[in-house]
Image (cartoon, rainbow, N blue to C red; front, side):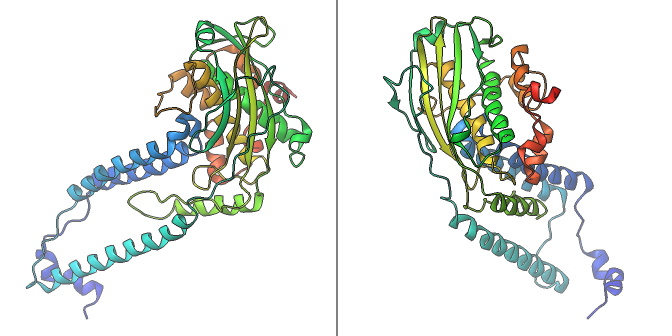
Amino acid sequence: MRSAAGFNQSRSHKSFPYQRRGPLGFGVSRLLGMSCSLLRVVAIPETHAFGENVPSAFFLIVRALRPLRLLLCRQARAKIPYDPRNRLCAEIAASRKQTVGARNKAMWLAAVPILAVLPGCATPALVQGNGLSSYDGLKQSDGKITKSRLQVKKEQVAAAKTINVAPTAFPAHVAPDLTHEQRVLVANTVSRALCINLSDRFRLVPPDQRADLTVRAAITRATPTDEVAAGVSAAASLGSSFVDASVPIPVPRIPVGLGDMSIEAEAVDAAGRQQAAMVWGRGATAFFSTPRASKASDAYDLARDFGDDFAKMLSKGESPFEGFSIDIPSLEKVGSNIGLAPKYVACEVYGRAPGIAGLVGGKLGLPPEWTDDGPAATRKR
């Protein structure tokens, strides 16, 4: 058996047509791999960007990037010709075959527990309160992971130009396990999400000014998140980021203590007549909900999802759960979601989104109350 030094000086090694992966190809390949990981970090927590179609949209993007990355890898290094008469070539080929086989086996073993908990999700519940001016005419309109009852008068809503968003109500008896600060944060997240998402279609005015439509929302149910299970899940997800794989391997949450939420909201005209209403319920899922070590973790994420769904209903004048569509957000909406100034000053009352700090905090499993400053009035204090 030759030593490493002897091997490097051998004639067969010098004549063997092998070339290490070029720096440019290696860098581009790694960049694509890191971009896939970043997609997983950004796209999964921000499920409200594509609604209930984010799982399929995300994996289509990842599958589209993988062949490009593999092509760059192959072009960046010389192919190793297989010649059975060359012992060195045979040994390298066999070694590569064993490495690929072991890697594929490890990935399949890692996929077994993932597939086992794939159906893990909190069961959504529709809880009707007494915050709507009327519950007549509400019809069932469920999505893939959402339950809802809604009604919308399309012509009246389409004629509206201005809208304001009233502060969301979150009574203490609805979620006694959450602290007052956590309830304030979650309620403010609902109002902020409504304000940002409605800005693409309507002109937002302050709550104390007259508008064509006024949106009022109230949280009727919010179950707490298991902090220990969420913390362990966040640690496992963070650890998977250091695993070298062709595509990022999603690590699901431990399907224990997943939270769920129910919200009701309506849009009334200047005369107080109801023009749209929705009773909405959704639960956190093991795959597409960001685990954070906080009892308000899932309620915080679901609050943003509701804001997106209700805004879609008002913008289109129909149920957001019918058909398949991926709406491309405007630049103003993207900027507002990453912490920049909102499109309309009226939304400043609900503070700005945590942006990059929120994304990094979510990846690390930090509580949302650590990265979100909440409403503007709270920040001033």
